[in-house]
Image 1 (tube, chains in turn green, purple):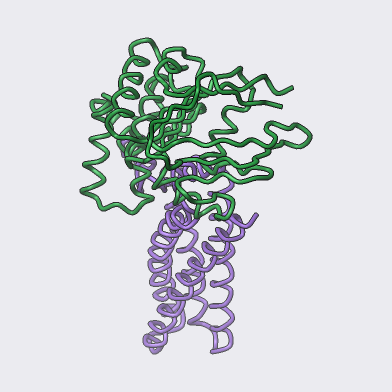
Image 2 (cartoon, helix red, strand yellow):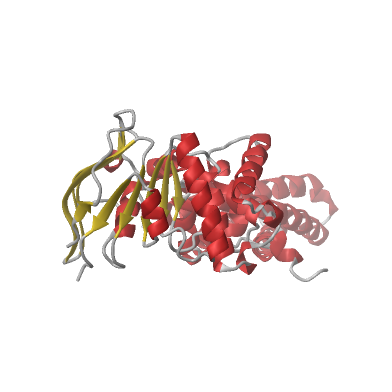
Length: 233
Length: 161
């Protein structure tokens, strides 16, 4: 079973309200217990990194924050909404409005172009065409992939796909950004672009950023670092 | 025709679910075939026979569109969960399927119904022109309703499972 420990003290900064509250959460897959009685909060507008070995439950935690996985017991409250009380469709709509997710495994649609992939969350939010175009172009510009707008994602490298995934996570300007090993598949140049965005984004947009990572550059950047104790047997 | 043209049609959500021009063509041709037979047979049958033929058209197309809807959702399981992870609800995904099946199915049944009506009139004689029109309209409406009901039922059953 994984345990979370603070590597640095929780900073006093922030407006005092929590983006994410995890209360007495346990998570098991059959006999395998991943978390037991997990309890912590993320302050709104902070940058928190979660480090730990592969297979220690970092992705499970991100998926529970996003409402993709539900805890076995306990509650996860995101922006004041208890996710356990929401249906799958309510969770999907809530995610579209509230969470930008860059998962470790590719969830882009390979048949679609970069532009179409980045634009998709806005379609699900029923944003009008002009606003969709402006926001999609702005997100691609921010990540530096505007010239790839018409490129089919299925033909791209893993690193390029990760950048598209990043742009898609930012397109709806979410108050919470969840990143699962965001620099792992990137070459050094692309990783620097992501790090630059993370630095600027957290400083200027005041969103909560939660990152799982092995990358020391990201943990150095974070205001708070949590560590998952050990690999789940 | 340029290679790949058939696979380039449809909106992004429909294309994500691999609803291609080939899917549209299959739905349209099946609907046309069923409607053609139903509309043609209706001309040669009495009222009871006409009701039975229309019911057969409805049942066939409802079952067909439900199966297509289930197939699209089941074979795109990963895509569906990927789309849901970025905010797609069951209705936003279902409506992409619904729109494609209904639009192309209605088009196919209209073409098939008119052709079947003309064929039935030719076989039954010119005196039945008005009843041929009623027959075609009824078969086309029944086909479209069947496609809508079948697609909705197939989607609903898959989401529940």
